[in-house]
Image (cartoon, rainbow, N blue to C red):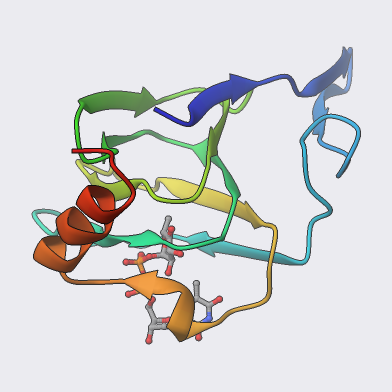
Length: 136
Ligand code: T46
């Protein structure tokens, strides 16, 4: 499955902490878009889609949340609970985000501008695309 934790530059001194990610240096793409999820409502599952081309890094900069990731064969659960943990998610991975803690902030760095045509929002279509790629 094309997911992995990536290295952040972590700086800290007696004033506090500061984390950095530089596009193309710490992560494999130039950052074209940044967005964040916050004030998430308990009980809702977000995501429920895959991307055709988009690459992203997810960092829970406050609180924690869980992710269910699926590449058409394997399913994996990941907990993001530390601002030092950046999760790279490549194209073709179905993702669901849930169990956001009170005050959680999920920061996302993306390789492309927003494009609704890049989304696969139907799970059966996703499985069919995996099959066509020989993944299933
Ligand atoms: C992803 C996960 C981690 C925009 O207009 N521009 C944007 O850049 C984004 C990200 C969203 N939107 C609009 C589209 C929808 O009308 O904001 C609304 C909520 O988006 P969505 O339902 O796709 O949000 P999530 O939390 O289910 O998914 C988001 C990202 O869309 C997605 O790429 O991987 O976070």
